[in-house]
Image (cartoon, rainbow, N blue to C red; front, side, top):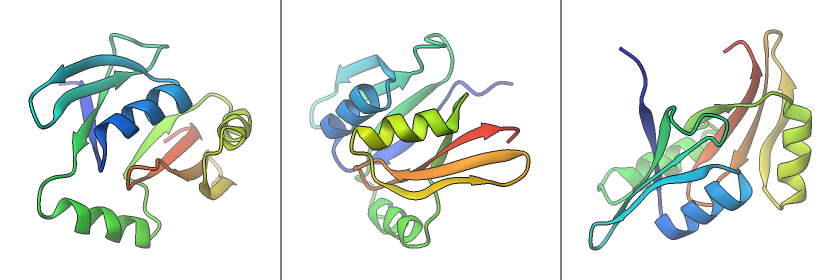
Length: 129
């Protein structure tokens, strides 16, 4: 068994696609119109055939409450690996990304947390997770 993908619940799929591609640097894998919503996935340009992140509309009745509680408690919804967290932090900050936690060294891993503008906190991490 292997991980093929995961999803992030977003409040606006178009805004999320713009953020995850233009700011974070992911590439669009799928963008299929399904009527009111779309099936949108993004992948790392470093591994275009690897795991994808689905940008899922947060239309389930519990989604907005869940997301708000996670943000309120400062808990990231998911985590992305980076090679150089200091450089990535600086790059994202220069693009206007709002961090809720600057890089923190936890011994075997360094993490930082940012707001994805779509209702989620996302962690970036360097090191052994």
